[in-house]
Amino acid sequence: MQSKTLEMGKKSIGVGAEETFQILDTNGKIIGQDPKISTDLLLQAYRNMVLTRTLDEKLISLQRQGRMGTYVSCSGQEASQIGAVMALSKEDWIFPMYRDMGMIIQAGVSLKQLVNRMLGNAEDEALGRDLPNLYAWKANKIVSFAAPIASHVPVAAGFAMAAKSRKENLVTIATFGDGATSSGEFHVAMNFAGVYKAPTIFICENNQYAISVPVSEQTASDSIAIKASAYGFEGLKVDGNDLFAVYATVKRAVEKARRGEGPTLIECLTYRLGSHSTADDWKKYRSGDEVESWKRRDPIPRLKDYLINDRKAWSEDEDSKLRLGVEAEISQAIASAGKIPPPELKTLVTDAYSSVPRNLEEQSKELFESMES
Ligand SMILES: Cc1ncc(C[n+]2csc(CCOP(=O)(O)OP(=O)(O)O)c2C)c(N)n1
Image 1 (spheres, rainbow, N blue to C red):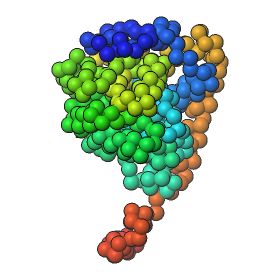
Image 2: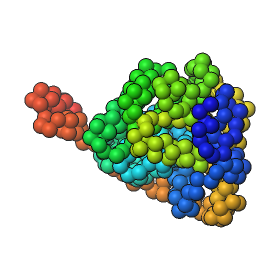
Image 3: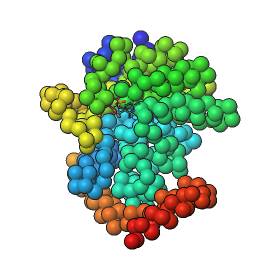
């Protein structure tokens, strides 16, 4: 069983056939080996988890008001996303999926940049061309996601392999959902990385559903993690709502990859608390009891309980202040972004080529003239 190779506490939370690695239980108590995360780093992660959750809720309401396009929510998956990025170093690259706003925040993209992207205004670095959730920021080493599910996973493995051949000591992480593991690209990437020992960490955020399809209908395997053994490397299953377990497991995989010992597949067991996106309704395919049972494993109160009761580094009072501060910061960012006009129409063609080809110049001239008339 793969999880036995982790020399830290293990405890099953009763999902799948294999044991699930856990350090922080649902009451915020340490039950495995403490990965000794500094209080500063932990508080920063907690703040980012609260920011991610609050912004997520706010963006859903902005979409409902018609102020932004379809949005994909990440509530419930913050520990998987933030814990993974905490384990990376500055030289490492992130190949996220559309649901990974927590990763983007932990990787250092500012609230201002993020909200400009969501609204697709003139200060959005993608100039409104990308869907809101197709995150890409080169300065933060975040590579853009393409809509066909899992198409970014072989790219992450290839990028890692290219870096390895140039003797650069970086690793890549690719994140994807349980549904993505049914795609050919996932298997191509796993095979390639296994054969060439690419320094890649494959992170499956198993949130139990691919839109309305439950993971039980996605695979006949006992788990997602177990699939790694077919490709000759280690697969580990962790409680994805436990920031400590995710961090410790990804860190170990990163160190292993950096030593030249190849890839790891990490399955983070988590749950999307909301709908797949603003275009569906979870009540059509999930029971309220199921959602409530996962709310009891919510990663945010769990970490808060730990910080207050065990680490003695936080208080209810500080928590209320943090939440009020985050709300204000988000409202301010949205108000400022809302005042920025949409990108100028000419940017449709001006920065796609080093010099605008004649046919595009002609077509855009015609378009602008027709709009003026
Ligand atoms: C190749 C391909 N098939 C289908 C889709 C439509 N689609 C968009 S999201 C999605 C669900 C993916 O589920 P999963 O990989 O579990 O990630 P999650 O959304 O649950 O985080 C599907 C089927 C797509 N984008 N690309």
